[in-house]
Length: 635
Ligand code: COA
Ligand code: AMP
Picture 1 (cartoon, rainbow, N blue to C red):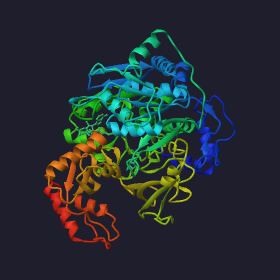
Picture 2: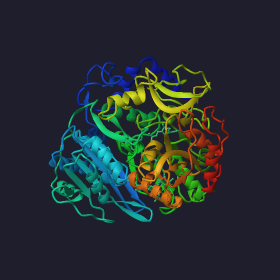
Picture 3: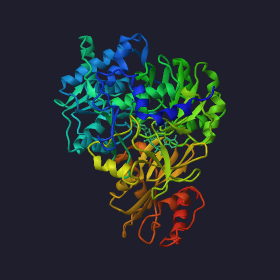
Picture 4: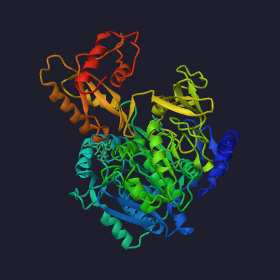
């Protein structure tokens, strides 16, 4: 079948507002106006201003009302605990309404914020939907972050409540969340009024009298009492959630997502990009702490009347590299969305795909990859093993959905390995040089998107309009700066080559090296430091920190390096995967004092590099190379 992509993209270009108005007809609105887009509102305009809606209603109630009450809405599959449970749409609605009653009982109302700090359990999705039902703005914090990171988010979002679980479970260890939560509240200036804690059997925790409540008990009572609560109408432009993501400093950016545009774009993507029909089972093997989890574990599959899977496990080791195929086969998944790193991990354990052959994957039909560059080697392995289309697609926390992809629902376009293919409707993607001039095909430059951004993309940063403007709009007036660099070829295919800032991508997780440098600099023996991302076969990149010690420090370097590794784990969290700290005499710099991080990375990755013309002392590069070798990193 010839792809309809070009025709559809053209129809968006010809009439953007008409395009999104049509897409909006898939959503149930409380009220609509004639204005689809107002260019004069917000930072670059707002979608569906003054339209009213409720995201939870669109995810649950309407499916219960219209023929899907008995269909599974959410399947919890937890190889790490050996548990599983299915909730139909009617059951999920009942739980979410009871949950929302508990939130209302605690005094939370529309516009309040609630932080959700939970592992991959159904209650995390229920918490998001219960907030959405009442117009409470949720902010999910990934479980692998340390107390300090949680505290930063508490201070920025100033939540009235924190919704947490007593523990998370990683292979071989139970992680008590409660001490992290208590420490974060201790550290933060803002103090939430209430903490609702879900007690997991694997590790229960003590509750602070007056502040903490047993969430499971409260929800269970509300269910038993048959309590229901109506969805609260919110404006399409009201925030649904804040999701913090790494910026160039230790202060994360609070990406704001609105209600209306978000629903419109996600609903459009389910059929047109992912080629999924309502009633089918869609699985995003990510975490609710990341944007992929927000969009494609929680909201999009439910908006579309699909069954979603909450998977509490890892691609390998829970119990083996066949777990993805077991889940796909057992729950009749038609499409899987994950990060390339998960496939690299599976391939390492099962290079010949022996475990794949054990399962019946007859109904399975596509694999979507995002979060980091999909290397052609991994993509080709996945195609060989699974014999389904393997689609790389490019997006960011900021956009909430795909910017550049291969729309299976419109008819697949030819795949070019290494390219996520073409822009989705809504995105006019261009390449500019550093001075903002357009670059022709096949020329590397800054990837930007012409304003306005389409529905679902961030309208601003939480309480930080100026930072939003400075970070994304100021450098290239009239465009959104993605901070990725890349090229567009003669056929309009985009390739993503690198970040233009200090963000690195570790196992599909977005991390700021600047944030890690801020932590290293707090160590009393460190005079200066630089953190770079070095290539890693499994995780894509790994952080590597270089430190120069203060003069007169005579302690063992080995001991200090271990302390630095511990410090980053304590302050940022295990997810930073910071395991390499290297002491050096000096850092390579330009004559104006700028640390040559790019050149250091090239040395670490064994790439050829040009001696920077402005380097202060070229001999330092040899010292860096020697230091890397002495730490087992061959340059
Ligand atoms: N809570 C607490 N700790 C967590 C955590 C969580 N939710 N998630 C990860 N961690 C810890 C891990 O246990 C690990 O700790 P360790 O240093 O003691 O080993 C550390 O954080 C780093 O985790 P990770 O980078 O995930 O590495 P891993 O070795 O545990 O697993 C993969 C490697 C490839 C299997 C895993 O990264 C993976 O499944 N990646 C997919 C990523 C993904 O889905 N990204 C979302 C975008 S689509
Ligand atoms: P996050 O906000 O965590 O989703 O990270 C977004 C960043 O991850 C992007 O700016 C890219 O640098 C990178 N990224 C995401 N998807 C892809 C992809 N398909 N190919 C290359 N890089 C990607």
